[in-house]
Image: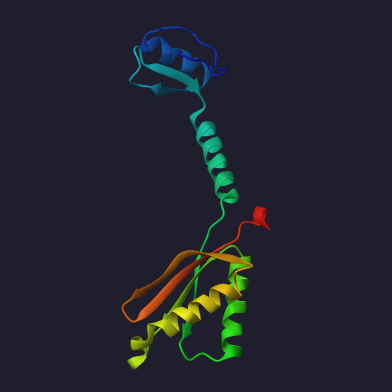
Length: 156
């Protein structure tokens, strides 16, 4: 049995532990049921749950959520459109999000996959200052996709 100040009270019967906790206006909580003998603690359970929830919220607040944003390209994209897409991807990377770059082949363009790979290599070069390739370009059906992860702030 452990009291509310983390002091050990020693081994006592269940009834004695219940009476002790009741007299102090506390709850009797089973801490380690598999230990021999089982360990119980007298505490205010509501306050204990409140502290746990508070710590959990604080941990969630410090956690950074990474989203995956998508930029779509085509084989025949013009230079200004390409620059606009690259700037959009850079903005996503600066916010700390990952970027999925997808290049969709339309019609007979699928026969010229090397053009698509060149386009993705050009895109990678355009955003290389802000992100690194997380997953190399891979063909998935009629779509060539690549993932770019943001460069860590410490590395800058």
